[in-house]
Image (cartoon, rainbow, N blue to C red; front, side, top):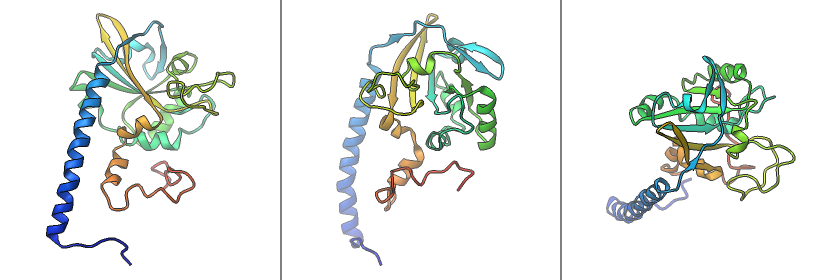
Length: 229
């Protein structure tokens, strides 16, 4: 039985127009936030980070592939893990095929994890992904960018020091800029800040059920790796 208000077309149009006004205001605020994000000061990258790739060892500068910008998705896959995080995998499904579009805007994209390269590549093949994925195992990269932790890490340590973590890995995304051979961090976001990068969730948001997670043990209890549904 439908437990929702049902109306005629004219009333539906009136309600939709009222919502449209709010959606336009939300769009304006989102664009304002994007301008503030772009206006953030930059942080110079002082260390020389090295990553393992299928082509051999490369530096952070190499990951730019000659472009001016680089987006790094910090994917949770620890050194001893056999599979990647299911939630990170859900997010990663939204990134397949975007590389060419980002490249057209002078931006490279790569996933970085501390897992051994052979395990990352095997998992990537299993799930049919085509984006680049490199290993930061043995470097400080994940620790310096706030997504990997040791038992001795002072807490709260995650999300700019606002959240306590118990595990060794957490998700995030970082944007870098390269100017005159110098690399800068321009932006990072973690936790719920990653929400805007998940197109699947935002498609669900326009449906009548929405994400429909209120009665679950935790919000993403339903999420599976896409070959496990």
